[in-house]
Image (cartoon, rainbow, N blue to C red; front, side, top):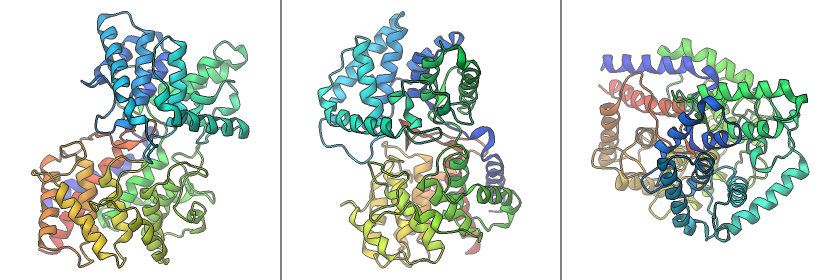
Length: 507
């Protein structure tokens, strides 16, 4: 037991030390790679990037996770347009035709009322890509997307009216609405909206303007720096966002809060610099996913929860400014609510000793018939949302509803002991389930079967654990699905270490 703890602690210590390093670690993005390839290609990196895109294509002709259909249209259409640009080889032509066929088959997903778990900015990006496809002579039916197109037109009109500045949520999708390459939209990273695709679009618009030479150099350097964040060896491959320093830091440390590990003496010396750095970064306006991006409710809720759990002073007004009568929001005026964000904010208030009883009914009202809470706008996995809602509810009187959620975990646990929404167990989703069950251990709500379920999940994690080796499974939602590797690793290590320490305490 001592050896297992030593390995897990050493692994977690190394992870904590690396938080924020090189702007954060992020999975490669099909969409941003395709858009950069189209709009501002590095001539020496074109074919490696094209080949990488071809390697990412799924057997059904689309790009992205087949179990998350709404997240696939944007990366698939962007890839089709990129391949159309470089359509000179038989393999490229075949992939291009397969992508078009996939888009035709997927139309039914868009010909009904829009759900809450839409990818970020899809109402801007997809209509823009459809227009680009028309101009490039790529026939894609637009009528099934009409509700999304109408929504995008309204949002574009609002954006152009307010003229958002650098480091804003709107700037993150600049490629869909921006036309004039104003240097003022470039933030301190040198890029636009922390987005490779938006930065490539700005570079394409600015490249013939001799007045922008210095800004162009900075933006090009941004793309080069962003590419490093993917740890991908193929030149020209981009992440979906960069840098993500505060997102990586606050959410990774929040995973330790969920596992009740912040007070572990063996982590004290590596945690203290991160905690003090996070505290200094939390401004009266909140905190964003980097110091150069606008504050949002999700990162703010995570940061506040972490600092409260570490017994550090926090003004709760910083968090409450993201509170609305129905939900906590990431950004003012956003279109879809987020249960996971609201659950994290409510957990933070609970840690502060605030009365959170008024929020419990919100979670109960959104519970599914099978007892779960489904994935939302920031993460497509129902296990992620269910885990965080259970943590927010654990001190509530809604025991029957929590029992229903526990039953959902039992029903959907695979024979091998793990959980996952893609018909096989995945590390991070199993970690979510294990942490959810572990967090309820003192509530006298788990029975013997529940503890056996927890044990089987823990055993699966231990069996598949590889020390100091990062894994990648994409279930987070942005412009497409992605994986912030260090955050997911923090959940994995926290789940295993929390249960292992609990076993040690009970002999």
